Image (spheres, rainbow, N blue to C red):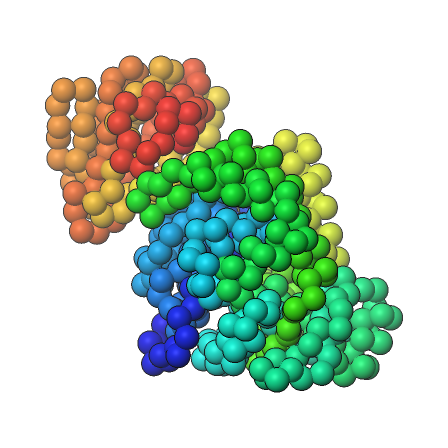
Length: 477
C-alpha cells in the first residue's frame, strides 16, 4: 500500500490520533492493547495501515498517543516506513486536547491532516486525492471535514448536513447531527445531502488554534501550559502532566465544530469503515454462499451468517445463525449479530468484577518484544518470552521469585550477577532470588525463551530496575 507515486503539491503533515480503548472489539481489543494496534487486516494493524495511507501525502507525521502505548506506536511507524514526533498524553482528554497539542507542536502555517488511527480505507490513492482536493479550502482558513457517502441509515455514526458548493470546490456545512435514531437516520438519507461524519479534518495549525481560542479557550490554555513544560526524549514528547490533566475533556465536534462558522465539508465516496463493531469487522471479508465469514481455524457446518475469528485453535460452529464467535487464548465471545453494540457494557461489567481479561491480554507487548503467560499456579508461573533482535530487558532483580530460562530459539546474552554467558537453543540458566540479571538478544533473529518463575509472589511489580534502555522507572513493567 505504501507506494510513493503520489507527490503532494501542498506540504501536509498528517496527525494520527491514536487514543481510544476499543472495547467494542473485545476480547481482541482491550485497554492495554486497543484495536488500532491489533493485526486485523492481512497481518497489519489499523494504525499501520493508516500510516501507510497517509504516507502517500507525507512520510513526516505526528502521532498523539498514550504513554502506555508509546512503543506500539513507534513500532507501527517503523513498519510503515514513516518518521516524526509522538506526543504522549499523560491522561486521556479526548480529541480537542489531542488536536490542540499537535497544532501547538507544528508551525502555525502547517497544513495538518487529522486522522483517527483505527479506521479502514481500502483505496489509499482515492483518499490522498480527496485530501488534495480539500487543500484550497483549508489554505484559505476553513476547517475542512470529510463526509463519507452513507450506504445505509446508520444509528452508530454522526451526520454532516451538506450545503451549497463553495468557490474553493468544497461544500458549506449546514449543520451536524449526532447519532440519530433509525427514523431520523432514514430521513437524513432521503434528503440526499447527509454524509457520515468520519472524524477526519484538514486545516492550518493557526486556524485550529484560533478556533479553539474562540470556542474553547480553557482547553487551549491548558494545552499551551502543558506544551510549554513539555520534555522531549528522542521522538517522544511528553506534555507537562499537571497542566494537561487539568484540561477539560471534550471532543473536537462539541468543542469547536458545532460552533465554528468557517467549516467546509469534502465528500468522500470510496470505501470507509470505522471498524467500530464486530459486525463491521466481519464485513471487511467476503462471505461464502451461506453468508459465513471465517478467519483462521474456524469451521462451520449447516451455519448461516456466522462469523468465526479463530486464529489460535479450531473453533466449530454447527447449525448456527447470525452469530459472531471471537476466540482468543484467554477469553471467548459468542454474540448474536444484533447485540454487538452491547459488548462495551459487557466489558464494563467484567471490569467492575475485576476480571483481568477485561483490560489485559495473556500475551503482553513490551518495548523489547512480548511475553505470554502460558501457565500460572499458586507459587509458579511459566512465560514464553520473545525478544526482538538487538533488544534487551532492563537490568533488574526480584525480591520474591527465582527464574529458570530455557532458550528455544535464537541466541541469548545473559547477565547474572557479575558474569555474562551466551546461550543457544536447548541451553538454560538459573537466576536465584535477589540476583541482578538481564536478558539480551545479540542476534539478527527473534530470541524466544521459556521462563519458569517460582516464589512467594509473582506480580509484575516485583522488579527493582537498575538500568533500562527504554527510560522506564522501577514501577513500570
